[in-house]
Length: 263
Image 1 (tube, rainbow, N blue to C red):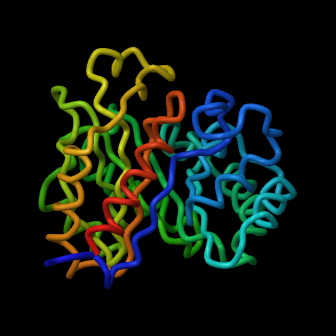
Image 2 (tube, rainbow, N blue to C red):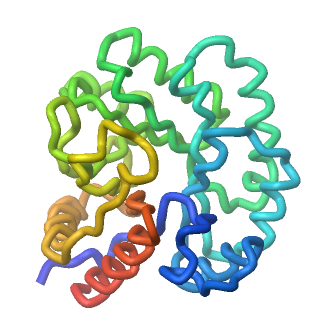
Image 3 (cartoon, rainbow, N blue to C red):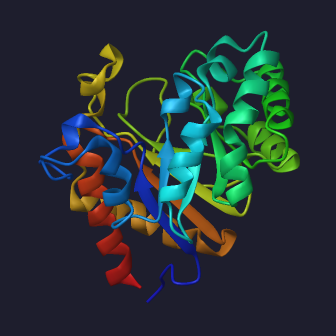
């Protein structure tokens, strides 16, 4: 039976510090400062998404790193100024680099996620901007997520491979203009983000956009896609971003069982 046993599969969630995960994933009375300690008992990796909204002081990142045991790693989302404003970045590049230093020094930072908006469409100028971002992060592996389906073409694929930038596969609602759930890679590291398929709430934004619980059948579809591609990757990240009321944690735990039972 084909499997993923020769691939380092790392499953986690997009963020962990959610008040609405109390009584769903976290104990109801848990202190907010203890949430990561609890999360680490179940998952080997996590995306830090708070950096998208605000660049933290290095001490904040140092405190996060201290909680992480050997073998645990982080993916950190770049600030929205990188992906949405895309101009006058010098100060944010410097501040973000300083914030990341504790994670870099700990060797627990595995990469940076650049989540571009639906309005960021494929063009040569957009391709060139990806290289600017790659250079700005100073050698830290860069993973790029697109929302608009104009990006799915051979030119993008060849460009990312040549520039050593990793493509992020997404699972979301099947609405016009959005990407289809598919798996391919442009480096030896695969990366999947599962946002849920809440078509009704998607364009409204807010937390309810991510109010969706994947069925076992939908998760099995992803398992099969990953198994077919296993020869092209040596490490694989899957982050569940359907965070509403702890659904991401529930699906991540479910997928861990699916993968372990299949191996």
